[in-house]
Each structure stands twice: as C-alpha cells, then as structure tokens.
Length: 351
Image 1 (spheres, one colour):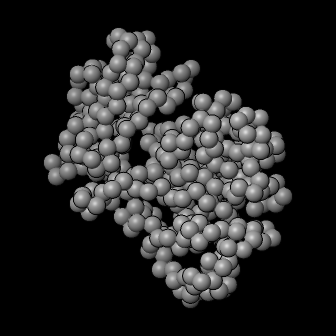
Image 2: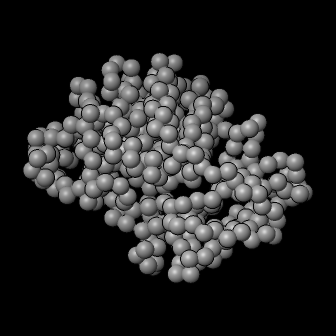
C-alpha cells in the first residue's frame, strides 16, 4: 500500500477463525474454508456512518465519509455482483463505520460483520482520510476486507521468509504500537492453504501492506521492501469478479413442499422467489450430500433486505433456517454451494 509519512495500515481485527473441518475430506475442507467469508452473490451491503450515538468519538466529518463513499463506488464500478447502499439507520446496516482516532484502521472479514450487534462498529478509520491519497488507499483496503479479502502477504503460497525479529520491532514502534499477537495475526500468520483462492501472491494488491527494507529475507527481489501502488490491482479485479460475477440470474418461482434440484458446481449459486400463501413460520433447507450457504431476503420497495442466513459448515446437517413469512410479501432465497458429494445431487425446499 502507498504510504504517507510513517503511517502503515492497521487491520488489527483478527482474521476470522474457520469452522472445525479437520474431520472432513480435503476437497470438502477446501470448499468450506474458501467460502467461509464470502457473501452470496447479488447481496446489497448497506453501510452506515455513526452519528452522535452510541459513541461521539466514532463520528466522522462529511469529507472523511466522502472518501469512504468514493471507495465503495470504486469497488462497485468493477461490475461485481455486490451492491452498496448508504442508510441512515444503523439497524438496517450490515456495515457500520466509525472514525475513532487512535484505534487503527480495521474491518471485520466478509460475513463476520453479521456477528456484530447494531451498536458495534464493523469498520473503523483511525486517521484522517483526506490529507493525501493514502486515505483512499486505506478505505479501499478496509472495504476489501468487508468483501472477504484477507491480507495478501499472508498468502501461504507467497514464499515470503520474514526477518521476524525485525518485523516485531517495526510494528511495536509508532504509529502502530502493536503487541506481538497483533503483529503475528496481521503480518506473520499464514492463511490456511485450503482457504486460499486467487493468485499465488500479488505484491501490487490493494490488500498488500507496504514493507520497508530489511523485513523480508526472501524472495530476494523484495529484500529492499514492498511498495504497492495503493490501488485495486488487475489481479484484484480478476479475482473479485470471479468470486462475485455481475448479473445474477432472475430467481425461479417456488412454492411450499416443492423440492427443486440444484445442479450446481462448487462456488455457484441459485435464487428462488417465495410468495408465501399464508402468514406463518416456514422452514427453508437444502437436502443431499453437500455444504451450502442459504440466505433469505425480503423485497422492500424494490430492494432486497437481509432477513436471515444459515451455513452448515461441514456439520452434516444441511443448511436450514426457520423464519416467519407474511402473505402478500415477496422474498428471495439464495443458495450458494461450497461442496457437493459424490452423487453430485442436492435440492432445496421450503415448507
């Protein structure tokens, strides 16, 4: 990432820990881990800037907010299958943004934001975003985390050999003042190889830190440092479009107690329109030997609002959720396949 002065990115929220999938076959482990942070394609992520509640220190000025808005727009302009909408009520938002000085710049990773309460931040900017281009770089980086992208230098296939003593000393000093665990979790810790998709290592990625001379021992070409340009790289573009392809298909109509086959490959998804015949609690689930993520949305004034989601994460209990639906309203159920068994067959139904 580009730098300004001696500042460095601070993404001090730990990477999400994947589910315990050690008992599963390698192919199934890989599918679950790769999909653990991803949103279902076609999701509208709503973001909110904190006002005077619950913490005054979380409020950012309009110029700071505009940098974040422009950064969301840059990701959207890639033509990915995610959309972003600013909302004024934090209860409607999946992404809640604060500007607390001195707390670092950080974001939760992908769907981990759904575990935070409505009064909690899922993203923070701890320094000014308006002084120079580094502010835009910081915002693009943190939004990348919200999309599910981890730090590029933690790619287990990068082949980086660190001068660990120098790395700990570097980040223990200003402006980060990180304890050793933060340095380990944000720099030195390698991702699970089964959880990685994309390039082997992209030093130009928006998800790459800047590192000065003496921190990297190998590859030899980077002993004098890594200095990414601070923009969304071509490899970033390629892979985020692969993960979230634009133009999701129109949802298929379905009805209670009708089982619909899902002829999907891992990482593919399908959408289903639900118009409940009566107001009551319904259950939605997938069936078969597969690992799936299911997410339910309600159509409100022409837009889809998140209602509930479920992920079976290799628990041999197909993804299932129960929620009250109302007659006269329209819902959309999205199913994303992470892994499918030898039979290659799975299905979805609500009742």
